[in-house]
Each structure stands twice: as C-alpha cells, then as structure tokens.
Image 1 (cartoon, one colour):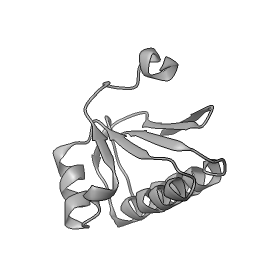
Image 2 (cartoon, rainbow, N blue to C red):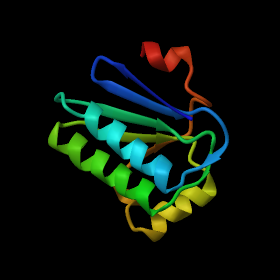
Image 3 (spheres, rainbow, N blue to C red):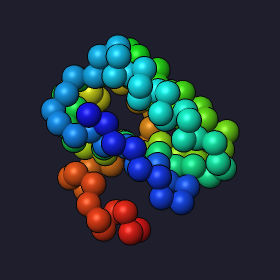
Image 4 (cartoon, one colour):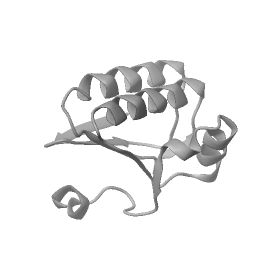
Length: 114
C-alpha cells in the first residue's frame, strides 16, 4: 500500500496502487511519517501518483509532517498531485504549506540519486 524509504535526510513516500486514503491508511501514514522525522534537515517527498482522493486525516498527517520538517529545517514536497487532491488541500486552506512538483512520474532512480 505505502512505501517509505529514507536516503540520508530525505524521506520518500509513495503509494503502490490506486487507492483512496481512508481513516486506517491515514493513521498509518501519519505514524510512519512522524517516526521518520527525527533527524535535522529532513526533507519529505510524497508521490501522490496513485492517489485519487485524500481525507481530513491525511491532510492532518501532511500538516504534522510539515510542522516537524519546519522545526528540523526541512521541506515537504508533493509530486503528481491530482486535481481532487489539490482541491481538498485548497479547501482545507493548507496548500500554501507545501511545495508542489510535477515530475517525476512516478519516483525514478534519477530522483533517488539526486
């Protein structure tokens, strides 16, 4: 369902198949994300390539990740955000907290080496 990889101080999060994040998935996402944000200068890169919709809990997990990365002088980058996901972030008035990227689709070896 969800893959989290850590390379140095960069946390890569991607989703395996086309899913709709529900309450159970969001709790796991938040728990995993917060557990990884312990070192300074941690950057989070989330690939939403396979995600069609997100819910309030997922948005709260992203906000928590943003707060922790800000405290650790890091950044949250969102890749391949679909229109419905972006609309949910705008309605929650949190879209300004994140850095949106269009490429790569999905994470490739080139981004892992950068």
